[in-house]
Amino acid sequence: MSAPLRQTAHKVTSSRVFWALVMRDITVVRRELIFFLLRTAMQPLMFTIVFGFLLPKMGFVQRGYTSALLPGVLAVSLAFAAIQSVSLPMVTDFGFTKEIEDRLLAPVDNRLVALEKVMMGAIQGVIAAIFVLPLARLIMGPIEGLSLIHAPEVLAVTIFGAAAFSVMGLYLGTVIEGQQIGLMFGLIVAPMIMFGCAYYPWRGLDAVPAMKYGVLINPLTYIAEGLRAVLVPDKPHMGLPMVLVGLAVITSLFWVLGLRSFMRRAVG
Amino acid sequence: METRALRKVYPAPKAKRTPRGAPSFAPGTPAMAPGGGMTSASGDIIALDALDLAIPAGEFFGLLGPNGAGKTTTIGILTTRVLPTSGQALVHGSDVVQQAVLVRQRIGVVPQRPNPDRGLTVIENLLFHAAYFGFSRSASVKRAQQILDQLALGDRGDAKVDHLSGGQQQRLMIARALIHEPDVIFLDEPTVGLDPQARLALWEILRRLHAEGRTIVMTTHYMEEADQLCDRIAIVDRGKLLACDAPEELKKQAPGGTLIEIVLDGDATPAVEPARAIPGMLKVDADGRTLRATNSRGGEAVAALIASAQNAGRQVRDIHLAPPSLETLFVSMTGRKLD
Image (cartoon, rainbow over all chains, first blue to last red; front, side, top):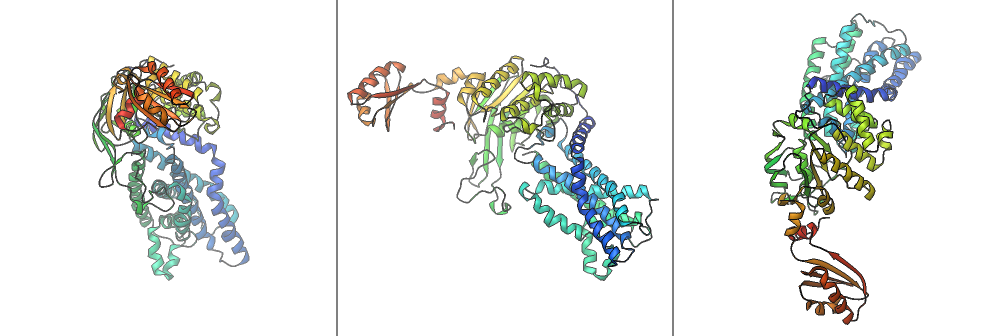
């Protein structure tokens, strides 16, 4: 049936197993790339059409609004993509048959499997942002103050932001029962998108102080404001150090929580 | 491979904290651990209670017991997927908790329910699993195809996993458990849900694997399966080891004689008294139209039983004989049937 038994176990390094896990996810994601992009970009793009194209055309919003909207739309796209890319597969991975078991049986620390999931989720968030940016720009037309001279910083904020939502996806995907995952989007993700300073700048909330400090628990606030800081630096935005600290705190918190609940599901 | 005083206790289910809509433990129904088990005074579920096993390399070992006996928990611990509450388990000399990675290098696991990676095709399931164990794609392509051929899945390599039948998925799980050349293979109830033909085919595969020198640990609640395949069988119930020996030795321990069941054309009660006088008769009962007798002289008593039934005015419609078996042993040890 197979080769003769080996006397010693086949040695394998963690980095090699990690790479194999990455290749597995790339294979699966590539197969569904179109659906992935449709799923993550449709909502932000429709929002862009209404608020970034139709309303300015009708004269209901001021011309400068698109400067605040574009970074927000990017933030929503990457957040949505990252959280979905991790949490949705977790439902089948830890579902009835525990599909992830073939990866949990790999000869590495199971935490590496969680880390790989988070990394791939963050990468998918970045891909969503890169996909949406030109389309949104096209729909909105010329955007006041938009500059790409800080491209490395834009990429950095995008990566940190995607990481924050990716680890949140790990946490939510492993604590929420499969049947309730739809509820997660309605009760947790949708309010985060509406109250995450994506469609209005944080400074605008000076008028509603309770809200201004309330939204600081929302990681989307930091992503949207961070992208404003690097994409439209002349417009009002939160300071970049505050953005990075906010994202670092939230990412660390959800990494600890997410890893704990992942391991609880992985090992009975 | 061995376990020492292995114990696994699942905490009492917190009914109130269970989210609405999630599987919950309805009040009044007995609590069940994943798979069953005994409930302690505090409501905790004792799935394994001081289990000691020693399985030499190369053995085909069977864990036999009813649902909830602790078989799946034992396999779960030995395959590093479940943490024991206390006690120790070693596989290939490595501790399943402290050296889980070393253990995983040596084992292949066929789960109770097929759980292939549905995002991948049949052959990709094997190639990626091999990659998780450090085998390069070029090294495993040929081997994957070879294993698929041997498991009669050779032409399904590019198929989506969802397009496989239940039996094919089960064979894919076996292929996956073999692709990284493990020394020890664990199978958890591998034949549940398979049709008789697929079951026999699987038995053949397992015999071949065993003949190659692999250690095989299999759980089952089918007596016949354990009897046919295993070098030794551990009978477990309610988390405890009741007996552990070769099937022939266990059968010798089975109490009583041959079970003879005679189905009559009417109520069997009138035939009970005359049957008691038959030599070697240990026990006689009537169960509707069935006369159930246990006799120490085996089949010899059949003629006399038929005669006594006829004397009672009944005609015999059917006869069934069951010699001392694992089943009769199990019933005598646990007071209940296997399934």
